[in-house]
Length: 269
Image (spheres, rainbow, N blue to C red):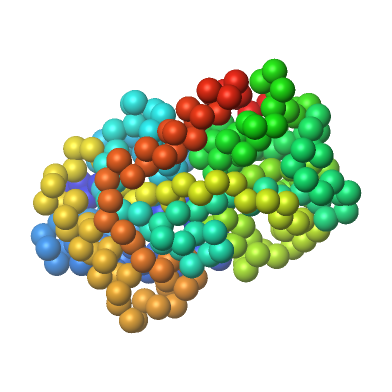
């Protein structure tokens, strides 16, 4: 019988692979005990975007922006993680707007007509939150001289460090992972400001997943978060709690986009 697909690829720095593997192993064991045949291993063989669209998706983590902006993304929210990271209280998160330490700019307005890096236009933390922050400063729908798409937050950090871009918005949990596991990657960077907060990246399953399986997933997650023997795993992942929730919690993500559009700034540029 097909066990389906599981992924934790959104926050999966190489130094966190072992922790994510162990966390999933414990969740899968608890699901198996309830008669739900879960995949034994996390899928790292394909992109997260492909995994989100898999009809047999059992468990994954998705970005909040495509969840509300892509009508073809047939996902159901299981829960909202709470991260023990600055700017991430109560199931919310921010992005840090970062720039080079030797740059004399002191305010966001000082980056007008300069170069920005984003991981992808489908990203909440790298694009949607960044756009919402810049929108009040834009003139005639424009603020930056250029915007480059890098493909990942890690690549955006590198673009700023190497001078290909001057500024970027980096997800706070990703930034915390780089600070802990790869400090050289952010050496020479400073945080200029934080974006507005929005709900953290949700744990999801395919919309076709049965109500009973969704309930079992929520129980397994809650047990894993409370298990004292997994304290080191949670610490490695900055994971403090998981709040049961539905898609309605992510309406704020869409509101931020609507506000930017209303301000005449539909595209970060």
